[in-house]
Length: 281
Ligand code: PEP
Ligand code: MN
Image: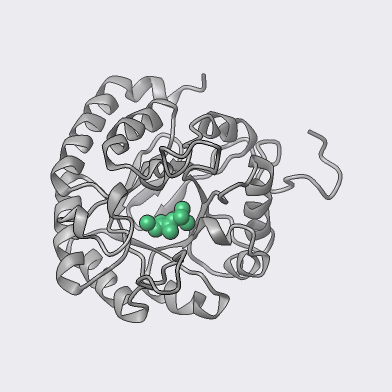
């Protein structure tokens, strides 16, 4: 990789900065040496629903509450999210249970609204190539969770992060959420090689979303353990008290019980691998 040229990661590359980026939000640190679990429903559906999920995911050890208020749905006839009302419920539930909050923004017009309610702003897969949104996200003083585009290469994904950082925001978390392949059994193909590959290419933290990455709830815990094993700095997982009744992404959503068992096993892995994880392989 040369340092010159316009097709380079001038800011996000390992060459630009060898030390890993650590993102501090209050007491929480996201990045190398830490494992941050973000969990919650695909969509915020009601105050009762998000409070119940916040309670169970915080008890299980998650530190960030997720919940979509602006939903990118394939069909315009599907639930589009509660908008501002959903953000209010998400914030209140996160506060009640001492969690940070993350939610997606789809439009530059909603950036300041969303950033008023959350600690981390999610830019979803479908918007990874939305350069005006990326540039505006670079002007916000909140960390950005940048999901991989449905068919984006590492280069395109890192260049999207470069847009955000070039516009002034250095706090970016990359999220591998699966890509489109010829396989149809799973919703997407979770590319776990992205984690060690990106660790070679960039100083930014990388987390994994095994929910969108597989689309099937039975596969979520296994892929979460695998994500931990390949050195991810965290997870984003969809959880709902009645997974089959979720208003969006029901098939990939796990119950609080399964989430609790999964977290227990991750803690066991952490206790075994803590030292090894701190070492570069
Ligand atoms: C989501 O997190 O609910 C979501 C829509 O994710 P993605 O952008 O990865 O599809
Ligand atoms: Mn979802």
